[in-house]
Image 1: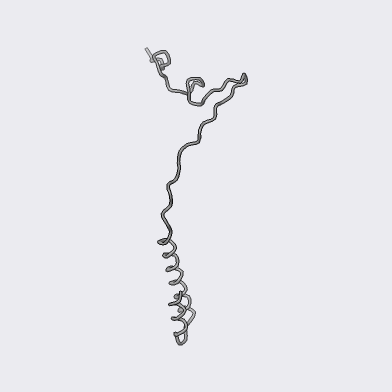
Image 2 (image 1 turned 120 degrees about the vertical axis):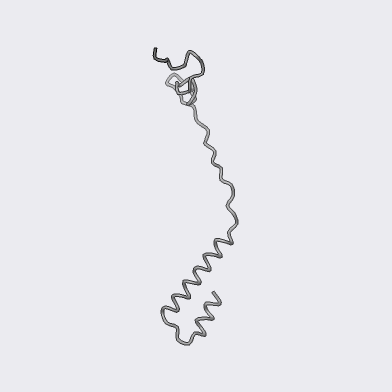
Length: 85
């Protein structure tokens, strides 16, 4: 910014384009300094929150995705999908 001020002070008759050009250059230099001068971002925690159990009207807790609610994949021959004959 000091160099831009000196350039404008010693320019004999700066036009609007010269002032605008110097201002744009100063802004670009400031943006580069801000981006380069920042410390690296820390690690981000992307873990999923803990699932809350479903509570049935009778007070029984059922965890989602378990055999209790029927959405779990089949685990044995009794739970397997029947094959066409």
